[in-house]
Image 1 (cartoon, helix red, strand yellow):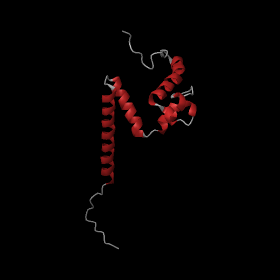
Image 2 (tube, rainbow, N blue to C red; image 1 turned 30 degrees about the vertical axis):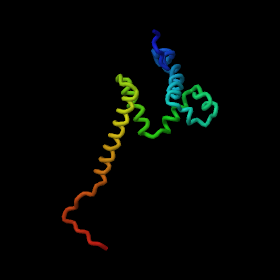
Image 3 (cartoon, helix red, strand yellow; image 1 turned 120 degrees about the vertical axis):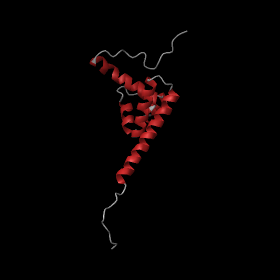
Image 4 (cartoon, helix red, strand yellow; image 1 turned 90 degrees about the vertical axis):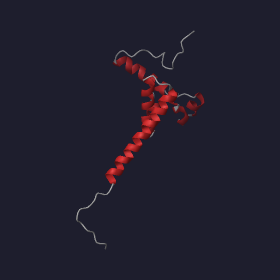
Length: 127
């Protein structure tokens, strides 16, 4: 039985700064294909190929910069969960729950900051 190959198995190993710089565009290109940035690309060639046709990884970088913060956090947490050994469904479910918890916590903190404070012995007369 042959071992299933991943999308990144054929990339050269990263051993130092120079090798990292050589692999970076390939890695960004593959990440862009995994996320499917070609779906949002105005270049019809990318859409037809179902893959980014640029070789510098800028499509993935632009996509991530344009993505809402909640989506970037969700992707980050899902990747962290996958690295921890969870399957993809469970990793995404936990990432969604974590982002929702953070949103709820941020809203509660915002409400606490904006809540009126009780006034002491000050009476306000209506105009």
